[in-house]
Image (cartoon, rainbow, N blue to C red):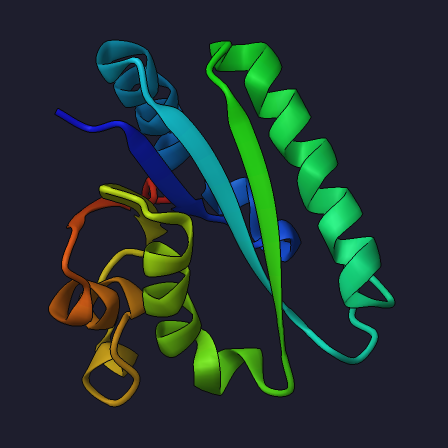
Amino acid sequence: MFQHIMVPVDLAHMETLEPALQVVADMARHYDATITYIGITSNSPSSVARTPEEYQQKLEAFARKRHAVHGRPVTARAYGSTDPTANLDDLLVNAIEDVNADLVIMATHLPRSLDAFIPAHGDAVAARARTSIFLVRAQQQS
């Protein structure tokens, strides 16, 4: 059913991704799908990388580590932006078409009161994308 899974990852917040990454591994094995990890980075230096090229290298290293976990073919693509926070939804929707994904698996946070003012990215991407979106809620901290 699914042949190409796109997975947005934020290298600055890896601790919140594990539940979604487990789903990605299971779905990719089940459907014999390839995986593309997508990262959105600033064009200016950040806490993760000084340049978009360095971010791409780190994203590729992350993809290789995940390949060792699930054994499915992987690629990694970093997209640079002058304002990743403001442009994230547009960049993710464009990336879906760019990589020709037929499923997107995204980590999402637990609902909070701020969501009324700043909606979750998963909602916005799902509303605009032509492909299936699977949102995996982060585990509640105890």
